[in-house]
Length: 247
Figure 1 (cartoon, rainbow, N blue to C red):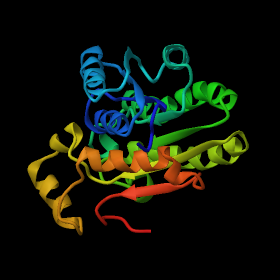
Figure 2: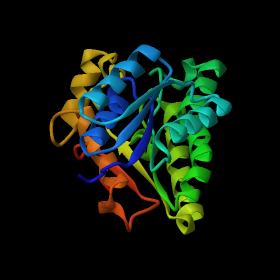
Figure 3: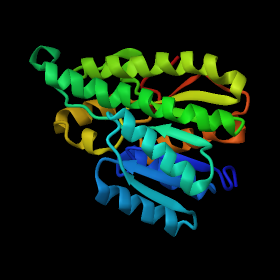
């Protein structure tokens, strides 16, 4: 098993991509701390991890709260003895033209999508360094690489996550901590389903593979970065978009 007995923490793991990541990590042998702002969905994902034969811990956490992030990492280390893998997945957006957005929306988008990554990454550094290394995988978005209509502030926050990933990777390499970034393209999540049908169909037509991603397909990229298969990879950004964007 690629991740046998590794200890992982996933934010925003109650549904969508985060849930798929937690399940996939467990399928490859990891014990998983499931963090989400919704205690019910966090509990359900933790049950699925346990059903896969791995240990789990469900925590109700608001990623915009730095002290809550520190406490969650401490609880995870107390439960499992160490932290090998951190997946910063929690994200949120409302799709609308930038001219119609408000300062409250800007703050919420930046606090969840960017500051949440900062909070958990900062909390994880010490226990990872003390253990001799670890893996941080940040979930950004292709919106942060190429822009996205109706998601201007979100794209800016995800672009910040990409730059943060590269800079943190340079700082932490000497401690054996690898930091990489997965950028999903359109994915079958609650946010995608909330879009107008015409928009969804147009996106599907624009993707060379002619469909949006399934959450588990994003999760497999996370497993790759978290596993020994990526032992010589850090500071990288991987687009998982069915060919919609190409480097």
